[in-house]
Image 1 (cartoon, each protein chain N blue to C red):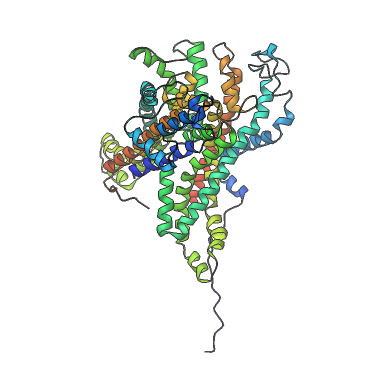
Image 2 (image 1 turned 90 degrees about the vertical axis):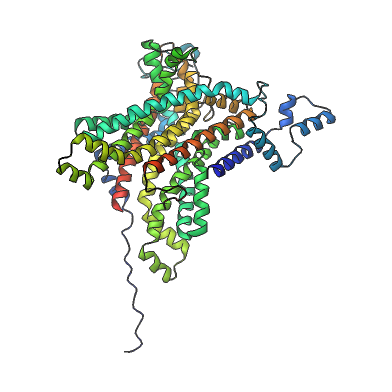
Amino acid sequence: MSAAAPTPLVIVRPSRARSATGLLRGTGAAGIISAVVIAIAIVLAIIGRLVAPYNPTSPNLGLDFIGPTGGHFLGYDFEGRDVLSRLLAGAQSSMLGPLAVVIGALALGTLLAVIAAWRKGAVDAVISSGVDILFAFPGILLAVLAAAVFGAGLTAAAIALAIAYMPYVARVLRGAALKERSQPYIAALEVQGASATAICLRHIVPNIAPLIVAQATTMFGYAMVDLAAVSFLGLGVQPPAADWGVMISENQVGIPEGYPLPALAAGACVVAVVIAFNVLGERLFEQAQGAR
Amino acid sequence: MLVASLLVASFVIFGALYLAPGNPIAALSGGRSLPPSSLRVLEARYHLNQPFLAQYWYWLSSALHGNLGISITLRENVSSLIASRVWTTAGLVLYASIIILILGIGLGVLAGLRPGIVDTSALVTSAISAAIPSFVAAIVLITLFAVKLRWFPALGNGTDFVSNLRHFTLPAVALAISSLAIVARVTRAAIREEADREHVQTATSRGIPRRQLVRRHILRNAAIPITTISGITIASLIAVAAVVETAFGLNGLGAYLVQAAQSKDLAVVQGISLVLVSAFVVINVVVDLAYAVLDPRVSLGRRAG
């Protein structure tokens, strides 16, 4: 036998994360309907302000709480502004806020989960107990604290919620990352001299991606509820800016007077979007779990 | 773990508000300029001339003795302000918890044991109600039952037990509605999973009566995830109560916390946050203990993966 050429290492790689359309197709009819609702909400968040038929922020006190009339399908709010226009304009902050929360929580949570799963041992212990302690802060409470410290506003509330949601991401993803870490192909890559960062970014994260997407989807719904709640409490988006949470809060005065429509319409927007995110998130979770 | 969590939580609460912009002396003097001698007296009295850790220690040790400082807006003791409101929040959370446990678990068990139309309708209803935020539930309930039907009062606390029950019913339902759906869904899934297990099928084939099967083999095993989810959701009510209290004008801790955050009454924010976070942590620990009692495989002090 001559000095054999080095045997090429055959690495069996688990299939990469499926494409977005493939993920969606697996969620069934309810999933697809939810995705459509979400798509509409996203489009409105982008162009809502432009297609709003009337000025969403200029009050006209003579018209307060007038019901639906021709051209004003949802009537006027407590300051005589067109409700439909305010709903359309409000889509932006109502959707952008949760997006920021989800991105923040996912980035932080995934980073910690992957580091904990990769280094194991003491690092894992420190991260895991840190995460456990953060569980002590319910999201809304942290957001109220942030408002007390930094003043009311969407930014402080979104950062606070991202921190409060991070532990949930980190806990779920750590488990998945640990499982992935123990796969033989990872050990093979390590032997080949691939750097830890490269393995984590190119193999572990893509392989837990379906779970990350599922979590992001479910979390978006929760973030929307919590942020709207904070705005409802007067500690988030500040009036006169249009925002669904703000609209519910400011139009509460109409309820005892028999004009619940503006507040209910804004509430319905929140509920519709949240149902869509919950249902889609649940389907994506089932799929991600089924694939493992 | 309990003590560590509480210590870190108290540290975060104190630290965050310590960093808050604004000078505590200015708040105490009401913006007037004071002669240096009285400034020094104030600094010494509130330990403001001490390093951060020492201030934290003073705050924590007096908090443990029930002294949480003085509200700058109401000029009253924070502890007594909290004590006068704690029962509103506790009552509201308790009422909502009872609703969640009875209806949530009840619906879940029903849906889990009866596949078909009952199950499907329970699933659809719970998918919708899980997405209803407490404040949306609040405005819908007020519109329907307080304004239209006039069955319940819309705002405020009651005066005695019976009127309290009437005043708290709508808030408790608003608080319970989304958690109830989550508990129902988890319960249904747990029942379904246990009912499909081999030992249950074996028992069925041996002719063990359905009742006994459900009680001894399905419910007992399903009790573990049901307890966990009930505990988690009930603990989370403590924070959401702030929203419901505000919507219904109840003078509970949460509504007061929100007012204090708006008016930057930091001693009150610190005090209430500490109370709420402690309650949250303690409930979670109680759930962990219940978990160990229900599942002999779990031993305390050792945590799974």
